[in-house]
Length: 236
Image (cartoon, rainbow, N blue to C red; front, side):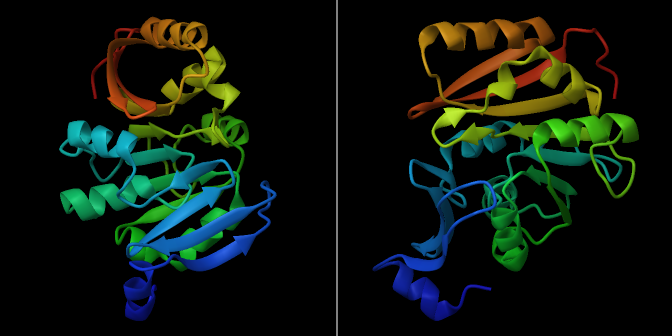
C-alpha cells in the first residue's frame, strides 16, 4: 500500500517508488503523483491511474455493459492497471474478473504489490507477449488462464513508447481476439495516429470486422469503441 505520508508528499513533489531498468525497457519509473500511481518510460506515460483519458471515455460508454461471472474483462497492455482503477474508483465497481496481459514483468510485479491501490476485485495478470498470449488462449479457448471464460469486454492499450504496437494493424491479431470474445462483446482501443494514411488503414480494418465503430477524440489520442461483429453472430 502507499502510505498516507507518501500520498501527502506526492501533492508537492513526486514520490518515486521504482526507477530503473525493466525486463523489456531500458528505463521505467513508477511514482506517486497527486496521490495516485503513475507508470512512465522516457517518452510516454503508460498508466496514470484514473487520469487516463482514452479509458475514462471508454468506461463512460461501457461501465454498465453486463459482464457475468463466467466472463472476463480482458486488458491487452495492462501497465499499472488504469482500466480496472477507473472502473473501481469512478464507477464504484469491483465485481468483475479482470485479466491483464503485459510483456513488461517489472510493471505487473509492481501492480501486484500495489493491488489494493488499483482494484479491489478479482484479477489475474499474465506476463507474456500479446501474440504468445493469444496463441495460448486459442488453444485453451479462453481469455482466462485459470478457468474457461471468454471476454465480454476487451481493452487494447498496446504501445512501444509513443508508438502504437504494430500488431494492431495485423488482421490475424483481430481474428484471434474475436475467437476468445463473446459474440456481442465490446472492444475499446487506445490509439495514437502516426499519420493520416496509417489511421485510415486502421479504420478500414476495424470497419471490416465490426459494424459499430465509434471514434472519440482524447487529446492527442483516440478511443475507438467497437461492437456488433461483422460475422453476424451477435447472440451472447
